[in-house]
Length: 139
Image (tube, rainbow, N blue to C red; front, top):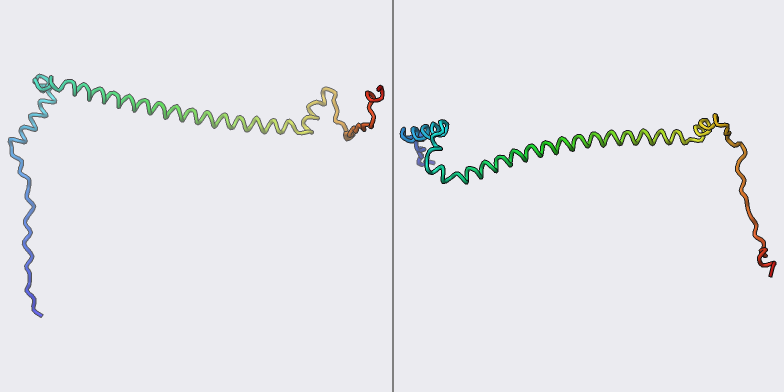
């Protein structure tokens, strides 16, 4: 089968952007004016002064917010470590209390006071109520 052969079009080399020398000089001159401070002496800067002050105020607010956030993070970290310490102190105190409230520990602690542990088990006192009470007998 014969087919017509298509020849791919030749690729053209990528075109380089041409920057006129006058534009490059304008950019360089602008940077020189900014760095030297000459741009402040122009009239259009005075018209933009409120906007520049607004941007300065926003920048200062942004910096202050960053410092405030850092301070808050440090404070939260400090409080978390203090909370962990208090929890561990609570657990230690609770375990000591449980140990000291054991019957054998209580008996050992009160022995120097002359108190002894009873060896006789407690007895239950039962009060029987008669059908007639003393108040009824008087009538």
